[in-house]
Image 1 (tube, rainbow, N blue to C red):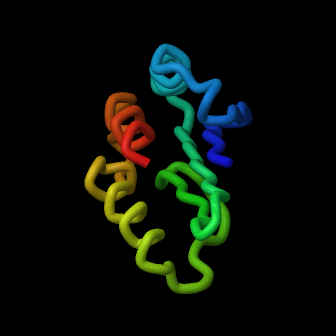
Image 2: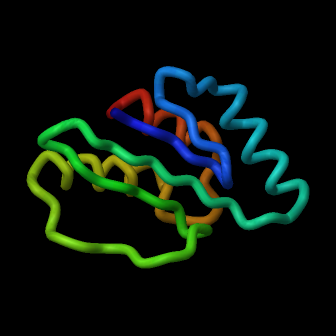
Length: 97
């Protein structure tokens, strides 16, 4: 199962629409709120949670396996590890996982 959380709203990937992502990010930027996006992937052998820099809390844990490492590399490729990512970056990432 793959879930996407933006702020306090969480949806399963199958229910996520590009318009929802863009609306959520635009509203938070307009209101000058911190933008926290979390993607949770629990589809064996993948078991991971990714967060943008606007999220608080502990990170890390065990070392990723090879498949998880590829997902982390995609996260970095689409600049979701920086605070100035765009909705299109998140959309492109979700389409490739």
